[in-house]
Every structure is written in structure tokens, then in C-alpha cells.
Image 1 (tube, rainbow, N blue to C red):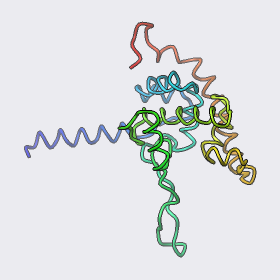
Image 2: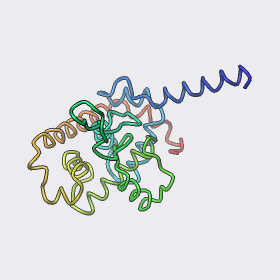
Image 3: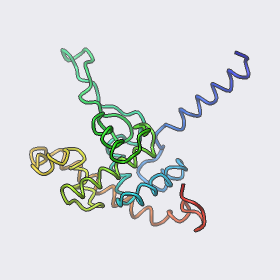
Image 4: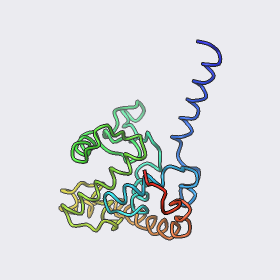
Amino acid sequence: MRIPSLILVLVCAGLAGCASAPPKSSDNICDVFDEKRGWYKDARRAERRWGSDIPTLMAMMYQESTFRSKAKPPRTKILWVIPGPRKSSAFGYAQVKDETWKEYQRMSGNHWASRSHFADAIDFIGWYNTQSNKRVGIGKNDARNLYLAYHEGHGGYERRTYDQKAWLVGVAGKVETRAKRYREQLKSCERRFKGPWWWPLR
């Protein structure tokens, strides 16, 4: 391999690493979209397709992965020291398990979707929220209850399994609070991300 080609490969690899790094400031949605310039359009597309607004989608994703593209559950410990298997197959921005991801690919038609790709992950959350709306009647912007159904599954939500998990109810409250904060923040900056009225939303 020639040296210039090697340099090009290394530069591209470095850029790819930077692209998948989480935003430096995740507490302000305007800062997130300023840094990750393509994310607004991806989130806007999911909002239009599925009906959950951008703040709800983004607050749920933050809680699942803090916007890390390859997030995984921590490993269990064998004899308190030796790393064991992970608690589940959850992976990516939206922390989706293998079987649920396959269901999404089949039902949404997004067969080539990747859990480590932001556009696919945000679309998944929108799709799941639509299932929560259809199956258990949760409003599409009810961030608290959407998150409980997201975490417990629709059957668990109907059985109210979260009633035995005070920590989870607390987390769902944080998701709701973050969604409200993101919603207020987005009002002040969304216009600059939308672009001119004639600009296509790809």
C-alpha cells in the first residue's frame, strides 16, 4: 500500500470515529443538533413518519444510550471478578434486543437497518412508540409511559410490572422531564435546522 493511500485510510477511519462519538453537550437539544448536523433531519423524518415528536424521541434515546452508537449492557460478573455474559442482546443508540430489532425490520420494511446508525435507531423508537399507542393506548408524546412500555414491553406495561420497580418509575420521570426541557429548547432553535421552506427533507 502506498503511503498516501495509507494516510487516506487513517484519516477516513478517524473521521468515522468522530462521527459516531456522542455529542459533547447532551443537556441542550440545540447544542446536540448544532454538533450533529444530520441528526435533526433524521429525527424530523421519524417524527413525520410515526407521530412522536422530536423531544420525546431524543429524550428516550438519551436515556437508553446517552447517544452512544455502540452502547451495550454491562457484563455480569462471575465470582464478583471475572467478566461474564451481558444481561441481554441490547445494542446501539436505542438499546434494542436482537428479536425486537428483527421484528422492526420486518414490520417497518427497513430491512437493512443498523442499530448503530442514528437514523435507523431514531426511526425504531418512533415505530415502537406507534406500537405502544396501538397496543396499549399510550399517547405518542407521553414520554413517561412510552418509556415504561419501551423498557417493560407491552405485556409488562399492561401487567404494570413497573409498580415493583421504583427505580424505573424514577427513570421514566427523568425521561419525561428531559422531553419537556428539550421541547422548550427546540422552540428557540428549530427554525435554523429546518432551512428554507423549499429545502427537501431527505
